[in-house]
Image 1 (tube, rainbow, N blue to C red):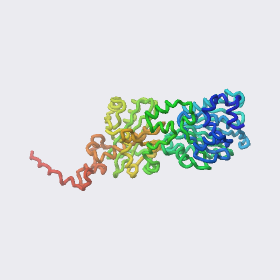
Image 2 (cartoon, helix red, strand yellow):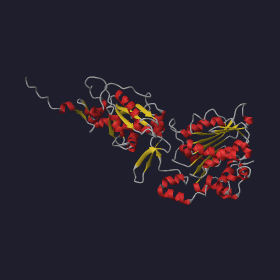
Image 3 (tube, rainbow, N blue to C red):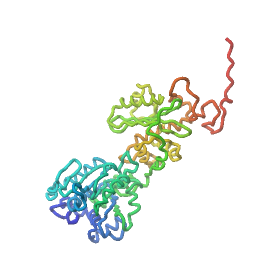
Image 4 (cartoon, rainbow, N blue to C red):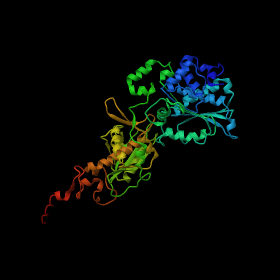
Length: 511
């Protein structure tokens, strides 16, 4: 039985398609996906949404859906998963004890619950399918035909080791992980070997579009309108789901045209671009996970405070060495936590690096100042916004004048930063939806402070002190424009002998 006949069968999926006219575009997509005959209306929809002239003669092994928000993607993914699990046999391709897995990958736990409810609703409300359930867990259904329907979140580690009959990727443009700068590519690379042992295995990736990058954009750019190769279907929300009120789309367009064009019109955003490339960030990684304090060196520190319930609280320490901003230490405490206990830990780290003053944003008003003050650390408010810090960091990273620590989380967050232009014409930098930038924010703040130290001179002396005992050693090269020997001015760039400009010492009167 093909999938369209199953959708029309009163004993199967008919109850979910009570208004067939609102499902016309989806029925056309399913007919194309499984290489079923098309009527004239479906053929016209195929040409409109794929840019192709000739429909595929065989079922597609790979399909990409670029469909607006609320277009029905999650329900169709669940429908395809249940159909493939219940109406196809894979035993001839399995070893004894092996199971074929149909995996639905969602961006987060909330989205997995949505898809799992659809799957459960179909399996438990259709008597013919309910009898096939051998066992049920919180995230999977084992069927009596050696097939498992499983729902999981985006992770390239948890998708290894399976034998896949199908993998359905929901909202792939919004997958975010802190252990990979490009989680969509990493996960796709991890699942493809698991699909190789079952002939006819299917990969379907669906999402509303976002920025012009990533696997979804790459598939659209390379394959939309091209006969042969993966099937790419692009449609707006109301083209796939005409039951959505037009007023919802109109209100979104009035509020934010660029965002609404992506969310509902299925247009990739042209106003979003990556702040830093993966290659530029990787080229700056130099050193271990942490650098030990060095006596006689000036350090600066930046903190990204948090209340302990939602975001991480982070701290970074850096210094300037031979004109390079060098990151020395990073600390991150993830929620939930006690801010007071975290500040105590951070203060111990600051003491190890000889730092008596930390810089941070205006978060929490007096709250972070008071906590750091209890440990003898001055909390100074940054004059730069988060966007300003990131924008100041870009030239140094691109020119290789930054030395980062080895941290997958830091690299992923830096590469995940996005720059867009506000309505006022100002550049705004932030993490992508569903992402984080707590570690990146602290690191950027510390590195920019370190780079600024050569210009701030005396301010460095006020914010740090030398590690060790006795009088401070000669001023290091990082602030050479401020020492009393010959050197290059940090202001004009000219070679200057400051000793010649000093007045002669006053003669001491005899006692």
